[in-house]
Length: 136
Image (cartoon, helix red, strand yellow):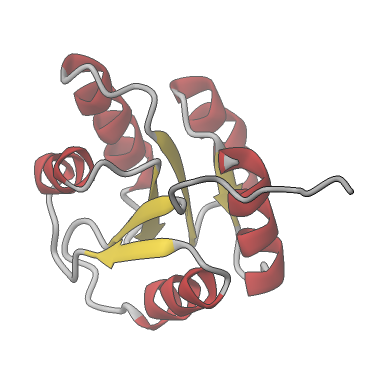
């Protein structure tokens, strides 16, 4: 009999809302879907700086950071988080996110080191599947 084994520790993801954007329903929906799939989720709340987000991810020994950006500052915030992760020796933490991000900006973000961008209309099933497949 062959057994398949789950990882000894669950995937841990920090979900964050950077900047001045006060709309966090989508981030909470994604956080809940990830939790329901067995992922440990730390939600940092609203109005987080890139520094606070990276600090939380390192302190929580996170496998990934999921950012929700609706403010239009994605071309600034995502690269700043990538930079801070590198500066702090934590480039192994995978960065992904979503929000109101134009299709033309996705390749720019991917070139900057963002692993995946989910645009409006992405299903929680697709997000959970990507997280669990990528981080196992």
